[in-house]
Length: 385
Image (cartoon, rainbow, N blue to C red):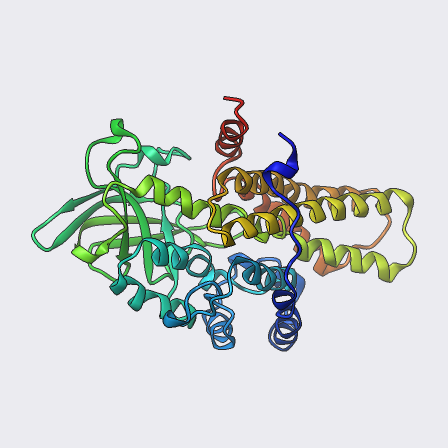
């Protein structure tokens, strides 16, 4: 299938590009003094005050209606803002999930009461969300979830367990994929999405420390948690369709190829300061830059499809699969280049940034869907299986 028939090349509109200068000026004032090894954490960096400041600038909920505090601009304007935030290494984790996917999901599937309550808080950077999908023993097989929401006289009773839930210990709400009818043998049938207030009794959140020493992943246990009738989002039993629509937002953004951009930019800046580099290093920089340019064009194309109301699951999966492969490759390419000059002193900040990127990069092909799952989606989309 020719690429042009899947994802045409799209130019960012001038009104969206115009956001770039004020966002850069804001970042220059707020995070420019943070060292690269701190900024390299970017979309895992949790800073509630920074997120609220973005909300005050009107840069959260860009695609949401003004009625709910948004800007009614769309995915292409959000692409510009996110690209600038990630390129600078801004700490976006607090608002990240709510702005990227929970807000659009609630707008599309939620009731008017859910929209009126949640969306203005998301736009102000005051309400943070996490996603409850993965479960122990399920791997990437979301259809096998066992967490159960059972109807009661007043709403729902929630029992079960989620794992690898990013920032569940700091989030205010979780949108969870749960079973509201049937058993795991029913696969996609009987799955629904619910909004869970994480301050409710019966919820235990246990952070999981990763190899970098951070603890953004969490295990979440639900023990007879009582939810109101309004916890259900969208239609009961339509959770699988809703999750797949949500994943198009999760898998296609610049975060799928810019996670190591702070490291790459730091390395190139240090090389430039040293003076002329050899041909092999020049070629390496050129290859990475070319790959980034292609992925950026693909990601903008997906954003354009989302702006047109389409659900580009195939294209989003392509961006995520190819993007995370490049992200994982960048630390090793830089480490090899440094290793080829054993007598050259390595900048301490570059060393720390490279160490963090090397440690965290294996997770890139796990979060948001494993490589095997994504390639299955791509193969089906191309008619190969």
